[in-house]
Length: 587
Ligand code: ADP
Ligand code: MG
Image 1 (cartoon, rainbow, N blue to C red):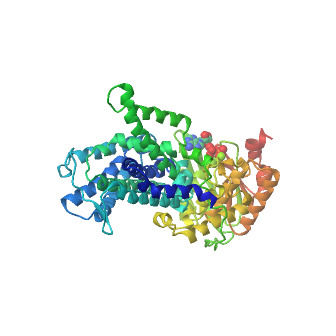
Image 2 (tube, helix red, strand yellow; image 1 turned 135 degrees about the vertical axis):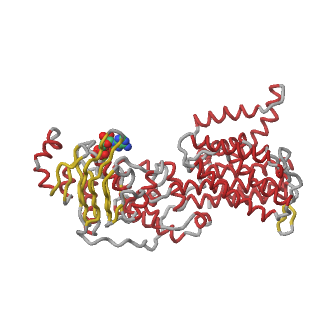
Image 3 (cartoon, protein in one colour; image 1 turned 180 degrees about the vertical axis):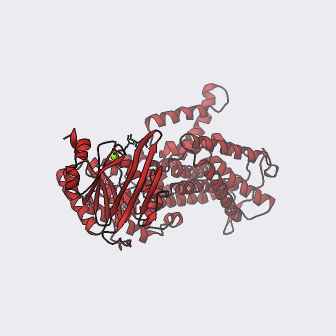
């Protein structure tokens, strides 16, 4: 209850505001609400997903013009116009997303600037949209016969829309799809390797952000009752982004804080700056530019994280993982059956041959160790097998099917789980959530049911699975720690739990024991023996020879990208080629 107190106070204040405040402040709050809806989309897109868009104002325009045109020229009901506007926005966002989301680095923001400007000029140059004068006499919105014809009456619909959007976004972020969205910022390689279709996920958040903007535009058009292109230009798009960044780009409530602060500040600056400078002009733009630089330099996470440290927290998640029915598991291949067969694999990076003529097999129920000096090409072999960096030539069969041309997310779907030599995790997410990403493909509920929180049963099962795997690797006491706060050895164990969440029949472990203490290594060896006993095939890269030799059934030795020896542990240990090449100088 105490946890919800700030929220409760805030909601009561919101509810009584139109009754208590003057027309001026109600109008101000209306605009803050409208801007917040757009900024919320940017929190999802930019703050959480890492995709910067300067073009959001254009989607606001799409919503506003859709209803402006349809209600005035064709006497369509505003509510129907909203649906049509949303459909139109989704289609436009899909097309624009398809064209721009594949752009990387700075090209994406540049792309959003380009379409932001294009849509803006389109609004101003289409005759049926009234050119630069725009459209007037947009009808009053009616709700159950109640005419929303004043700012005071309009207030509630704006704020209910905003609060609904915040709730839906928060629900979404705390779900299977939400974890996939949050994983985008880590670069996407890990997410793909866990089965997430990152291109699809990016498109989804792009469309959601556009739809939020469209709703804001629709509300705006019926509040103002006229539209012209001015509020949908690029500079407003930048302002929206600014609101999200200042508020706290990765937090849903940051959208509201940012929109509130910028709107009030802008109002105030527009009053005061011309008086200071003694002439009229948009001086606030300069001020905002400076402020953005300061925020980006000094407080990248915006105001919200600072605010929740002052207020009792509203964002703490559930601290228990509920019991849930275990997820179904895949059929394991019969022990001894060949699960993986690599034939003449070759991998070239520019002029460097990292793998050449590599062949190996892994059977169900065995631990196969891949060893060799640093730079021998072991991790490259892993990346080729798991589809993270496909082979240049050669063949890879997994469970009797060729996989060398498949994407990593397709390979994990077929039952191959992996860890990374250089740990890939989302440092600010909890250990539990990081591991639950591994179970991505074992759930199916999408964005809509997540937003409405209708996927509770499935979500509980996914989290229970993550917890179960974490307990197996000995991290049951760290479920709610931030993943980034774990020591490196435990982060590796966490990756193993994440890989186990994919329900693999072949497990690829790249140096899992590095950074572990003696007892942790023993526990890990014990776990791997148990998994092997269950019929799992394990391909292991490891430098700790005691660990490898005590565990492996067979060993393949690599040097300079090629296989130099293969056999039982005791055989390769005696092989003169291995002693010469690998153990020779070092031991
Ligand atoms: P190991 O895991 O056995 O230590 P790696 O597979 O990481 O070896 O590296 C094998 C060789 O390939 C090294 O010379 C490394 O520099 C090179 N290499 C690995 N990944 C890449 C890459 N993405 N681009 C270029 N060279 C790479
Ligand atoms: Mg390596």
